[in-house]
Image (tube, rainbow, N blue to C red; front, side, top):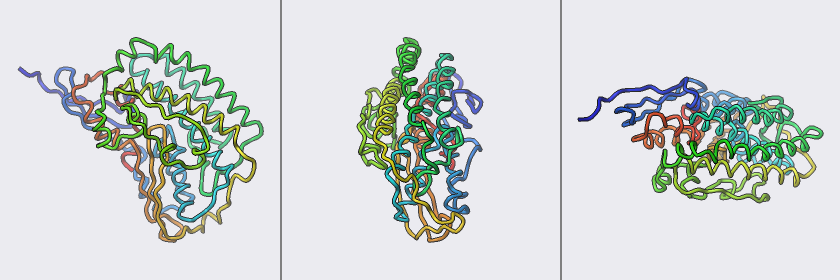
Length: 367
């Protein structure tokens, strides 16, 4: 005889739920038989809001699409505008943009490590990683004036040049974070309990991953080597040397190991950027932002965020405001179609553990 089905609402207060969202679970005993994602009401309707803002006013809006990692949104919007307008970006600005994007990636991975280990009961890890992430936020505060939202990358380059001595402070922070990897390994990645919780859990079939449009670490955790920085280079990624880590298995463990290896790659990229960054201008100045009009045209650009391929489709009708902006991010696929499928058959205790491994930003779903 089958056990009685029960409905359980998980989130949005659960610390393992990545943001203001909830998953409605139908369970038999402690096994999930159906899952339904419900995004919350935090940060919505970005695309429509941008249709009534000037081009420059759109940059503070796009940062809210993914709070833990806002910078890829800025870079995407800026590059789409530049492509339509035909505006050149100084070489130094491109290097600074890559520096910001990789610092943002490291900050996002610090939060991921804390969330992933915290949902497994390793509560020391989030205290470590959130604290270590603050050193990256210190750099952002010095560079942009803000710790979380930056509005630093915009059309034509970046808002200001690097402060005196900033390169040295970046390298010092990279040395510190690299030294911390040994501790992270001991506490989390080499921990037998974490491995037991992660291996064989939340498995994504490789064929289904391609069919559903999975990207980023969840895709590379299926053994598929795809990274926009390599496949379709932008900014100055084609002038830098780095690997694209992959791992077989398609489970939480594989996705964890991909991210762990990517932390090392980002540290290496940042060191190369500091070493190769040329002197020169950091900004190709735009006209008065209040009267600045972009010629009619359209563009689609994409970048590789910490959560995977992130794209912007931008249309201009020649006015001082966008005609249409559409955001294509990983969260809709990862947080809805993928999550709802791979949760079926899982234990309810693994719900937030699986979700955190997918990299979901709820505001990005309801744009």
